[in-house]
Length: 242
Length: 293
Image (cartoon, rainbow over all chains, first blue to last red; front, side):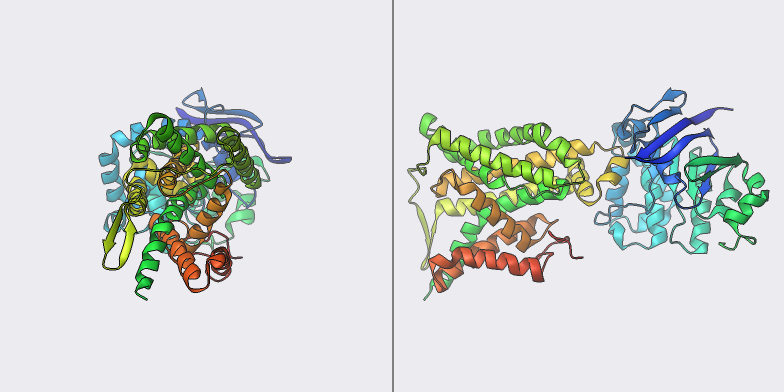
């Protein structure tokens, strides 16, 4: 068991408002880990702390055993931790290609630019067709593909995807999940934050459940799908969100 | 009155100064979200430096472009890291705005101390040269100003479109946090766009020195004019800012000719108000200077 990422007893606050209490999580190399929970549970906060956008009050973020807590976002991206933020946050006025180029901004990623671009276009052929169009003019599904593609351009070891299915139709959601699995099969480790809990639990190797800033449950996807509390609280009896 | 053409030409030539200043404001506003009110004062400062190097060392003002503009760029980096780096990161943009106002008065008074209140201007051997086309008369030096403005706009445009850092500047002016997420040092991106804004003040300062007489109080008015030009042209578009400057120059000249010289300022600030209220995104802009709620 080779843990790529280990979060240990991480605490985060926004000013006086505590958002995370001693949260711990492990992501094994090559796996898909899902992080689920209701709105406001602290999932996005945790991702932001891991990517260095938020400074924790305490705790450790180990990546391949090295503590990242004092590194800025740039250094963490260099190490291979890349986030696909909630709401995609594309540069709407820029072209698809410019967005992808910005994903490969750092020297190491830039050196592999051509390979990365080919990899992105193979995963998401539609991006190649729309290469010179403005990112903001694409459909929601295409924008999500671009957001993930932009992260792939950084040559990540770990991709953290926040709410990939937000605002997408069930069919598109399925497509995006298939692409995330394909990305994972190419060797990229994935940490997934999802509202579509049923889908997330189905594709992941391991899942964590958060509630009001605490980590309350973890297990394999199947275990959590079979867990009565999880089903009642989040999934809905028939997995109706699918 | 064959002079409408002359008025338009005069307007465009006057407006080219506003245009250069507006492009600088636009770059700084784009990334840091502040209206850099000291821009006009920086322009005046660089006009004085141009004046100085001509008076003391006999350096032709157009030659001093090669010293003043790089100096302005370096000063821009220095000012950013010294004054604005921390303030720019704050949610409350009033801090940066107040810093800019403080900087403006500080430099105004430094200029007053060093060069006194006497208006200065350059008397060049070729100051009087005029290009005559039909019945339109265009002083060469003013035409050169237009060249400076077009050249500056083109250089900034190419920087934004063709370079990596330029692309990052455009990205940062859309979404700073998303830019950081790409592993881009967004503080450096802000510093570079601020420094280019100040370098443009250097260009405008050289231009000002060749054509106008100027004193230490000239800066604030000029910054406001640049702001009017920016509001007219709209944010997020280099040529829009330039066009806004040219348009403002034309409006001022039309007002001077048809209503009276005393009405120039009324016309330009009246335009400012009208644009902010009825056309907040400007004529060519992607984004409003003031957000519509």
